[in-house]
Length: 171
Image 1 (cartoon, rainbow, N blue to C red):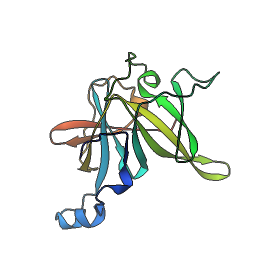
Image 2: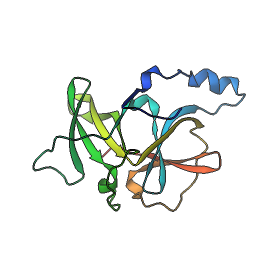
Image 3: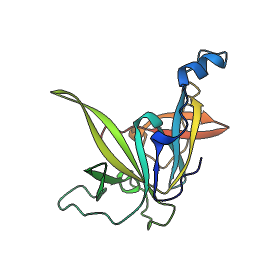
């Protein structure tokens, strides 16, 4: 499915049971759903289980005295969500938002002294592409990318293309 319109709640998409789908395919590999999107010329991916929604890029409330890669905040799901510009975070050239620019609202799990904590972040993507079903064990060793290596969790091979699964441990 393509993402169009102001709001596309991912929890309304057709659910796929990845464990039974992997068993039915005849191999022991685990398949996962990923949301694919573009940052610069890189095709990136995030595990769909962490994504809450995709919204159009809109006017953001600015936050004073913060890191330069923080664009501001949006109000969604009855709370303020910090929006991170991935181009700035990864040191890529800036691009003016257009109608294809989206904010991916996702939940990031962090380990703290008190235990696990979940935080909502909005990630600015140049374009959201599609939800894909890929084998997470079919990886590639490395590719030429403009994204720093510390922000790459793995590189997944999908239909002869390389998807960069991003690591959000340092957000």
